[in-house]
Image 1 (cartoon, rainbow, N blue to C red):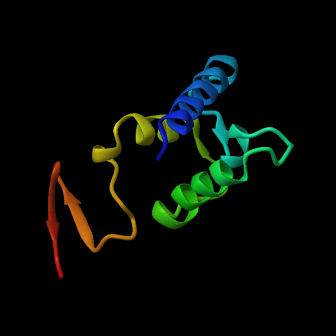
Image 2: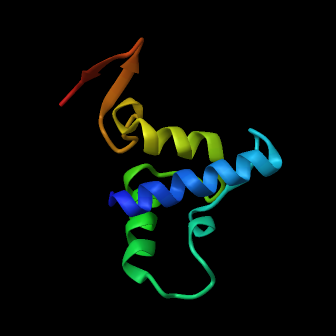
Length: 92
């Protein structure tokens, strides 16, 4: 994910959390204006949200922010791995 997109996600999540609290939800559209002025970034975000992490349409802003800030701590839901106490065992 591009740095500019990561920064935008963190900025938007922080603003939503500050305004509405830690339980606020959002969709990947929250990071873009209603104009289609950045289709490449929109598609990158959609792929990350839908294809890579298989997230629901609305997710908690805290969860998304944490996933972007700490990508190595986020399980890839499309991987055949099982998380067990911070250790990952993969079965192929």
